[in-house]
Length: 483
Image 1: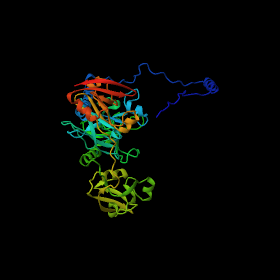
Image 2: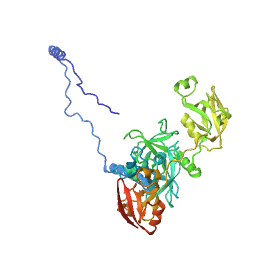
Image 3: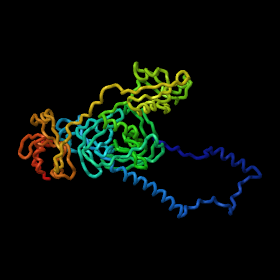
Image 4: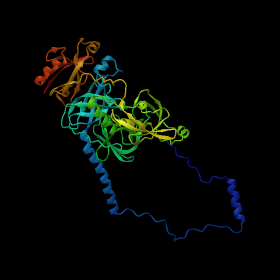
């Protein structure tokens, strides 16, 4: 918001005629009262004494304690944070640009990046769904310098969360805090890879809890923060000063607004555990439509506007119907916890497992009733898997991964109607990188074999060296690689 300063103007702005009349009137009087000048020895306002060296030192000690706290968070959490690189089809590019680059990045596909949090020591990583959605390939930069391909385990568009996995052991899982106990105003630290700048640390405070109604996801119960979050931070952790994850950074409002949102750690952890256990997320459901009580509705119903969630519909035969919940009821408690609005009700239902029986407290016609509702799985279609195509197969020691370019796309590029190997990843500083190869190069010859398959490239690479001819845009060239 832009606030314009008020225009300054003279405190007195009378007319000259009025001033002259006043002067004449004063001259005509025999006695003129004049204010006495201040006494020469009048005491001046006392100036605040400058801080003593002891006070300065005490302030510096406190500042260093806060600084050390931020350093400790970075030290503890950074080993559990990863950078995620993805490629996806660029639907805005023509066929040649799509597969052979746009002249600036030498990439046949659109590239994206995000962040992630190590969830298990054997390579499970929690991130945002929008980071890996529509991905053709997923690769992960670990804090120790390793660059590994990842596969999608499962995703949950409703909360914008997903789990991917790399083949690794001995990773450092992040520690998760109880997001219900964090307080508004507490210091928080965001860690991630904004704009690809890995392991960037920013700080701020928790600005609010329970934010929703943004229209971005089906389930919204965000933590709000003013810690700087930018493109590339998505999927990274929001931490407390103990270095524990309180949220998964998800989005910002506007550009450079200083308002960011994170999925609370309790919800994120629950989603990740279900994905790892079942490959998907099953949510508890009772079968009601709800809305918040407006001041007008609350007044008409003689209730406080924060009395609970107003039921506006009940699905026939659903658990709520069997529990005698009816339209017009206000659900005020779930499982012994008070709910003030629809978002509270959804949160408390989702905090329980399918198959549990949960007590409800219902307000109806000014009276309170108790009931029991059995939670069932929410009906609906299965979440479609993200269209991650064949992950690149790394060629040991040479620093490149390849996957098959579908035959139809080969034909569109004027190549033989077969699945030719296309380079899907290059390890920085590797033999492939030094040879000038790029993601999107199509291998049209390997060790003298024309139009090879990915399997033939893998076989040829077994001895630790390759001579390849690659097609890039409208040109081709040879490159020699050696382990």
